[in-house]
Amino acid sequence: MSFKSLGLNNALLKAVEKQGYKTPSPIQEKAIPLILEGKDVLASAQTGTGKTAGFTLPMLQILDATRSSKFRPIRALILTPTRELAAQVYDNVRDYGANLNMRSTVIFGGVKAKSQIATIRQGVDVLVATPGRLLDLESQGALSLKRVEILVLDEADRMLDMGFLRDIKRIMSLMPAKRQNLLFSATFSKEIKQLAAGILHNPVLVEATPENSTAEKVTQKVYRVDKGKKTELVTKLISDGNWKQVLIFTRTKHGANKLTKKLVASKISAAAIHGNKSQGARTKALAQFKTNDIRVLVATDIAARGLDIPLLPHVINFELPNVPEDYVHRIGRTGRAGAKGEAISLVCIEEMEYVRQIEKILKQKLESEVIEGFEPNNTTEPGKPNANKPKKKNHTPRNKSRSSNNSNKSSSNNSNKKRNDNRSSRRESSKRR
Ligand code: AMP
Image 1 (cartoon, rainbow, N blue to C red):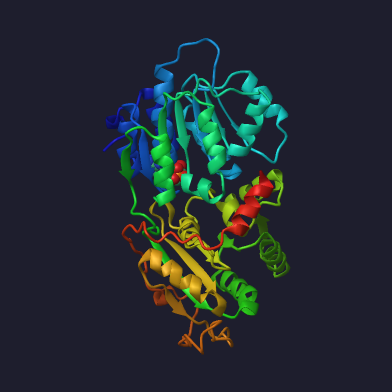
Image 2: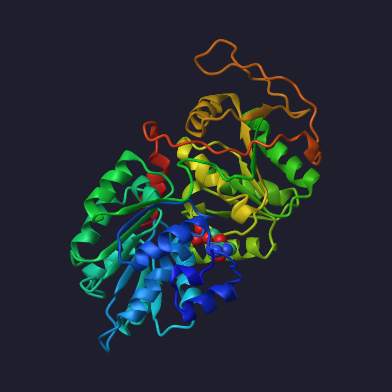
């Protein structure tokens, strides 16, 4: 299958070629022809599947073919949950539309609105936006959504997790009822289906990856360790393995800062990326990480959402997320575009319940081991009598032959959407908005 056979025009084919894409990814193969036909699409696709090109390429082709007025009203709106994802999608829109007469821009909070307003005033065809800033500018009369023909909701599941449902409904009310709607989501929960039912008209369902599946070539491991020894262990893993590009997830912003300081003190270059950091600091940290100027990026879930880091070899969960679906998103940062990756979780006894929840949605047991010198002293789970005493194993991180390949595919599981305690996520998002 070639991009040409999907019905894309020469300007877009040239742009795709410039990106070095040889063949369409499965989501592109399925979604592009349907979108070109003008259909509403409900697509299940994780980050890393090529979903952005999947909706952007046909969207640009439609807009290009149907331009009418001399002035440029906003004709396509792409909504994303986070600033980072918005910036990344915007970069893609620019790259893919490089050979078209198309104007686009991106707006999000955390930076001054003045230049965003000025750009919109000059006329843009495609607007990429986070919900908060979009509503803010709309209420100031700085933009109008009355001429939107195509709406994309990207990472819709995360938008709901972050409490954007009301904002999304308000945004819908500002657009014409007749428009093409594309909804992309990593998971298909009951809530997503409800949202889709309210927005999409006779949508075609496109599934590129099984729900809640982890990337195919990711080796997943659990290292059992006491909470107080995690920093030492993570430092040892990175140093002994001489890892050059590691993404570490912490549950809190404070935890991210603390770990970053300790890594830097151990001469491992690192930066933190979370909701309390300015947009400038986040952009700089990500750029340094991508160019290998720093070895470690320590991130909270929300800040990391949508980061596009090709071929990331190592992801470490310093703490497990309390929302099991976040585990799937986190490890989706490794093993991207078919590359091999390793996802390691440092798990103390208090987190064993999270392991079980994650295993339930993955429908797979996670291999658990203990590293010599880091044997946990505390093996009694809260509320349980001396449970899960770990088996001791010798371990040398560089010795890859010990790792077992836990790559997997899990089948869909719609019924198990326990959102236990998403308060920290919401706190972070509301603060940033
Ligand atoms: P996305 O899932 O949209 O975030 O894309 C993930 C990564 O895959 C990005 O770095 C894209 O540039 C890349 N990509 C998208 N489509 C293709 C393709 N057909 N072939 C190779 N790489 C691709």
